[in-house]
Length: 224
Image 1 (cartoon, rainbow, N blue to C red):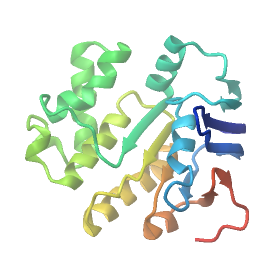
Image 2: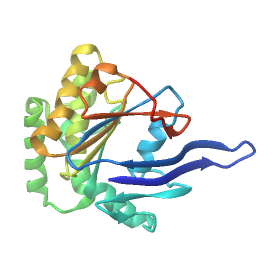
Image 3: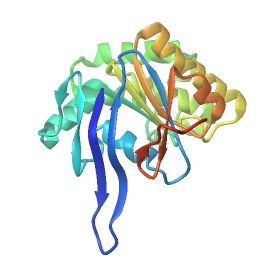
Image 4: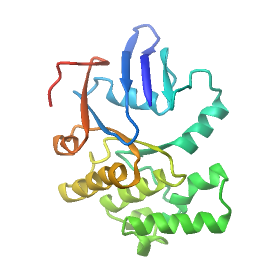
């Protein structure tokens, strides 16, 4: 994954620059932490890398492929196949069970039949110690358990890249350490690329590399 001269400006009566001239290359299997002060553009950069927002300048490349010419259908398909997302607030659907939440990306992609999708959902939940909670609803779980379900959902279609926005920001220290270990294990054991925005110094210290964003730019002099 790479960004070249990536920028995002919000037009209006007062122009707001969220991201400016970012050049970034993330190696396959790398755990990268993006840090910086509030309002610095960290999450905006993550959303651009995840094709959830459209840059006003520059481009995002996935495996060397320029995504700037993708239409909405191709963007959606790329997100489903190649990118998994974990957010501070898990965004699990309250009306669905844990297993149904994990299965949702598989249903949208349509690559697996119903039986295979259920088996994969159960396998993922088992990996994170949640198999016994498969038929519960999100409100019946702790915050740490809900975030583990969100990680399982992010892995549903086996994407090579996981993007996480403050994944431990709403958790206590024990649950935070557990999520940190899971994300780190995705790179070590599964070869996933993980890019995470965080304010958590302990979480960031476990990453392979850290960068600082200040005023929408990568700050080469930034220190954790």
